[in-house]
Image 1 (cartoon, helix red, strand yellow):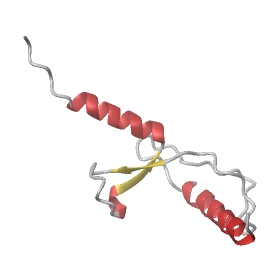
Image 2 (cartoon, helix red, strand yellow; image 1 turned 45 degrees about the vertical axis):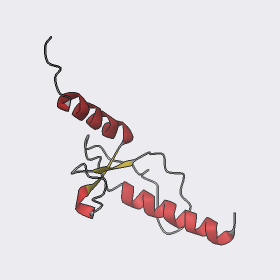
Image 3 (cartoon, rainbow, N blue to C red; image 1 turned 90 degrees about the vertical axis):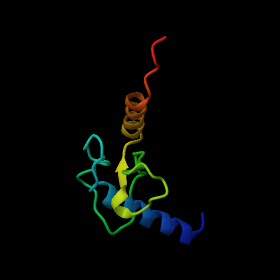
Length: 96
């Protein structure tokens, strides 16, 4: 890996640790990432990010990418939300 690319990756990793530790999942309200107590910032030597996340469109319109419409959440919480939405919004079959 080139030096510039490695440096950029280290900066992005540091920024992600800093930002994701401040966000809670939109659905379960648990922290997206729990930062270790001994983690310090400024030296760019951070472990890999041990979390998966997805972005939920609050109005369910994927074309609306305004900041206020985008919510960070765990992939499992996101899947569960949409599965429940499909189950509760499915039309009921008429009786025979």
